[in-house]
Length: 168
Image 1 (cartoon, rainbow, N blue to C red):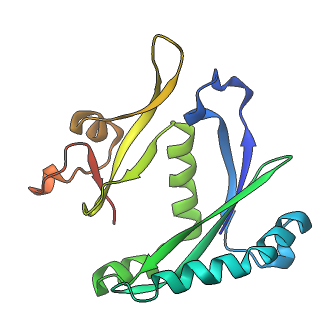
Image 2: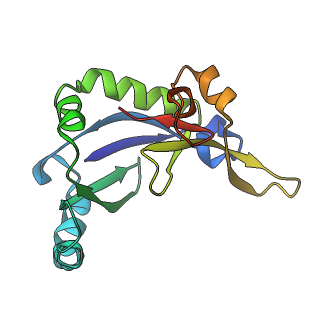
């Protein structure tokens, strides 16, 4: 998955607002910058080792590599993929690029940062906040703040998880 990011000079130093997302899509190695493709090729043996270390985990399917490209740099990381329930899989197959990309862009433009909540089936929402020393740290949102954004919360469904948004 490639994410094309552009630096936002008006971010005021806030790392949560530092970039806008121009595009995100699955791309072949031929479609990405040659230097990024080269580094990804070099990393294949490391990714294979990581994949093998996960292979005995329940419901493990594989790894997805995320490539973040800016005007003058790139970075990549990987995430494990696990089997989901048939209901989740059915929902994923109906996702449309033009819809999820706009939603992702809106969240990034708003400075929303999602953090997975361990065993919780949702993502905890937060924003970067500066303390008195101008050091930035992630601060979770309350249920009221999540609802004000227009997202359903887990507690609205009778589930535990203050500040967790339902992820469908």
